[in-house]
Image (cartoon, rainbow over all chains, first blue to last red; front, side, top):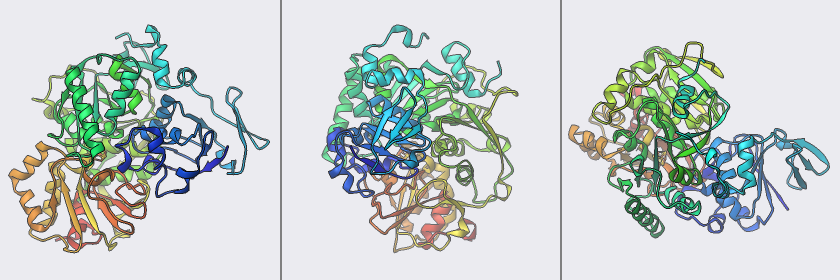
Length: 162
Length: 417
Ligand code: SF4
């Protein structure tokens, strides 16, 4: 497991530039993740790696290609001080876990990160960093592995009545 | 219970008392998909076991980001979408009409009080007619296409109260950049930004669209302008909308309330690489540019083109830069064509392209190379947004863009006489 650290306001154009949006396959997208911003990412990121960002991670476009490019690269979790709304939602929907950790800046690239999300903290090379709880409804989507999985188990009372 | 316009919309659509902060499943009044995010949405729709969309009459499709198809991949994606539209009976405007958000409003697809989603972040633009509209990803869209509803967290609202009169050559784009500078790129995350006050009331629909369009650049979930006579006039002849109570209550709760006076506002420019890095034009005046782009869903309407043409007058654009003018839609293009300003732009040295997103997203033509500088009327100046990650994008109004294009360096439009 390796931590890939980024700063504040990492936008979706940085995660996957507009010229690659005709690609829909996560593995293919992953080959261009952070292209021009951090070129070594695409070749070196591996299964189970973690991204750590600052504030407002994933701002910008609604392109789901952004979280997909990360899952395609093997990333399972993005930790940030805060997330842009659409990216946060898209991540949950595609099964990439977004974790809000106000002290994310204390995580370094050489740290080992073990999540204890139900208990509300990350274990980072011995330190305990608190995480923010996920709303109940979203938690059900996470547990279903994403919105597609959730849709398959959907109960009629989960849908709107009007 | 007192509510903001946004809370009232959710209450009416959900049929119960909901308040900001709650996660609700709400019916969507309409949905828009385009060539970039549509193919994935369709894939997700099928993955969820979808067969028939919830209501084809409430969905529109159009292609604007990579048109006409500029690569084999784009062509295949569009082909896939066309056949989905045919099978499902969805109205597909294809490549004929222009930029998705402009077209969705123009075609009367949005009524005040609606909940509309689009698989594009600038869907928040439809708040200009008093709807709650927000951008979603493809999986959310696939879900909504199938079930006709989607989960939302009812947002708190920030109220931006605007008074005062704009100086000549200063307008809605300068105002919204000023507001973004104040609220910052994530200051409105999860929130709706409600624009009120005399200045907003006196803005035409084009200006209101510009403001709501950029709500997302503060992290906003939606932008919204309470509907009034200007709204009704815009909607007349486009759609028959139900009468709905769409005024925020006097004692509604806001997460913050901000006041702006545009009386002494000067042209604003967002400098690389974040949209809240906004300065008065004089601080960057003289910066050489390589390309000027006048267009996009933010500022590609007739009113923008007209303002640019007024600044241009009978001058020519600088001959060592590229000037791209792209009307936001066919309707706006025709207005500009008939008024003679397209000819004026062409004569002056611009390349006028058919309605589409153009270089706005850097996914098609008109890219900038490393070390190059673009001055653009669009909404994002992120690193790499219009091509090379080593390039730079400045954002401003159509007036400032025109002035900049005349001299080849960033110029205050008030100084072009
Ligand atoms: S014009 Fe730009 S911002 Fe608007 S929809 Fe097209 S790419 Fe997006």
